[in-house]
Length: 504
Ligand code: NFE
Ligand code: MG
Image (cartoon, rainbow, N blue to C red):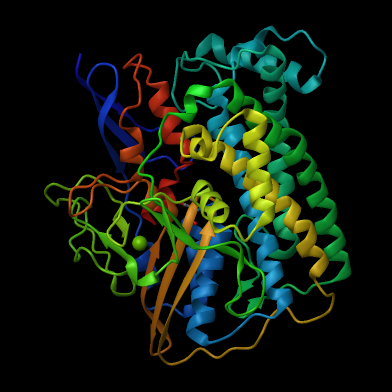
């Protein structure tokens, strides 16, 4: 029977994402992804001192604050013509990478991976692990009182195909508990050079304010070692095992097939390469990124400002009564195309680019272990695999970056804020391509525009009526039970959406 299903809220953090899907009785035939909230950061920034921007924009989100800070200071570096010294560049990488890894393991263990785990198994746990015993008793009490809630953190859960191997299942549940502690380790790791987390205090144009000392290098090394052990011995193996156990999910949620990555983690000062390179894959062809090809449509967004603008000339004028609109997200497009951003986009661009042997080896090793091909990565399960692979690549690369720091050498270069100027900061957040555009007049911010990963992925239809990346990925998703659309939820969560960011 045909029908409409609304899932709202759908994410376990950063709510206010609603998804409405039409089905023909068995599969999704069309989807509307709705950003249900307006925030107004771009207005808040107008008229402010430019140096407020990296602090204010970090408040867009508690999950990826560091990346907003980095995008902001990168835009300001460009506007002021300042180049961070090597220590400053490397410290930025170390803070940002720590945040990526923390975000990725949070997503798998706390936000989306639990959809694959048979959580009820913990209620019959007979082993002696004190953490699991505690969880068992708590879970039983939850089950006694709760009803099924698609965003509930634990039990009860939607009925679905779950991990069938009991040993793997209980192992992932144990790692869920470990991941709570690893989040703390990841935050401490970033805070070694960020001063504090989640909102980093040390990010400034020209570098970072934190001094590089031998003791901080030792601290970073020690915490990184713990995180690295968890990523290599728990996270990546768990994702590989889940991926191997759900072969059908490599055919689900494939999406628009176009990908965009701005590149992240500069490996040298100035315009040198980035550890994860920039690139756009459009119609299966890898191209260099052209910042001028980025525009934002608002035909279906609750804004009265002009549609199709480049971000440098962007406007954000809310109009909650706009006829035909259905989301507070704008619809970013690249060269007019719908694109997907995120860890999968970064991995595919790096794999195709070929200049990073570590990426190729990591991807090929995983695919071989689970009996898959590169094309299978473009899927719901591929997004999980890409995240875990990226975490692995980053904990490894961080062990090398931290050794490149030189104690007691400068981490920041001087700069002067010009009377007027403009700059673009393109980087990557855990969830994908992130850009900040700053314009300065009379030494104040005259315009500030953010184009954010989840805005790309969760965008509404554009001026030509083409659905956004997630709206496209949902089409064809099977719906076994319209009251409990677990497959729809799994496809949505594979993008790790953050609506707080997307609307900003
Ligand atoms: Ni609020 Fe954010 C998004 C990420 S943008 S989580 O979308 O990652 O910096
Ligand atoms: Mg914006």
